[in-house]
Image 1 (cartoon, one colour):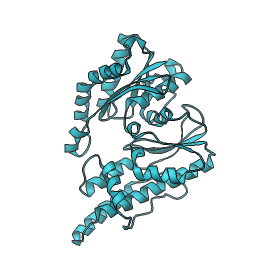
Image 2: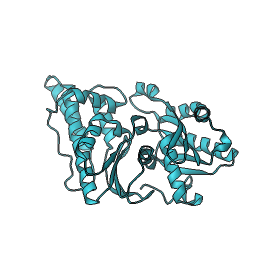
Image 3: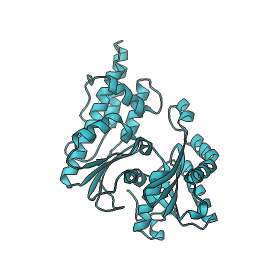
Image 4: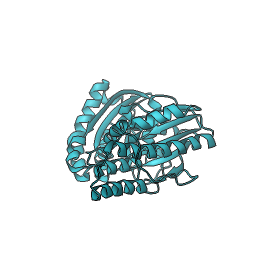
Length: 330
C-alpha cells in the first residue's frame, strides 16, 4: 500500500510518500524558520501565505523523489489538526484536490498521532506502551494498549514544555526557535541557579508556567541589582529541572502500567539532554526515540499514522475532515 501524506499544521510544508506503512520513499519538508526568525516566533498569516507558495512544489518533489506515479497512490492522509487554522486549510485543500482529481480515498490524521507514529518508522510497536509527547504546543503522557488506542494519563495544566523553552530563550536574549539554543547553552553550563519544584506531587500532570515566570523574575532581579547573569548556568538549571520531571513521570507510568515499550514524540524529543537521560536511565523497557529528522513536523509521520489508522477503521470512521471521528486525541 502506498500513502501520500501532507503536513502543514504550523510553519513546515511537507509531503511524503510511504510504502507498506513504514518504508519512507520520500519526505520533502519546506521550512519557514528563517522567515519567522525576524518576528521571534511563527506569524500565522505569513505561515499561511508561505504554505500556499510551496504546496505545489512539495507535492511534485515528493512524487519525483519517490519515483512514484500519482496513479500508484492508494491513500491520501493529511493533518486535520490541531494547528494554525490557516496553515491547516492549505494542506487539507491541497490534499483534497489531489485525492479528488485522482479518485483516491483521503483520511484526516490527528497531528499528535502523527508524532507518536513517527516512532513506528524505527521499530514495530509493542503493547502496552507509554509515550511521552513533548512539543511546542503539547506535553502529555499517553498509554496505548493497541494501535490507535490513546489514553491520556496526564498533560500540562498550562504551558507546553516547548513553549517554555522558547520563552526562556527570549528572556535571556537568544533567537528563535529557542529550544535548540537553550539546549546547546545548557550543555556548556552548570545547574547552579535555584529552581522551583514543578513536580505537582504524585500525578501525571505537568506545569511549566511557574518555572517560566521564575526565569523571568530571576533575570529581572539580577538586572535590577546590576549583577551578572550566567546564561549557560541558567539554561542548565532550567533544563535539568524540566527534563528531570519529564523523566520521573515517565518512569512512574512505565512501572505502573507494566509497559513493554517507551516512546518519545514531538519536537522536544530532539533535545540532547532529554535523549541522554532517557537512554541512560530507562533500562527496563525498550526505548524508541525518532531520528532528529522525524522529531519536528513532517509528512512522513502523518503517512505512517494514516496507514495504521486506515487499517483499523473504515474510511467513514477515520475521515475526520469535517466533524469528530473515533480517532481523536482529546
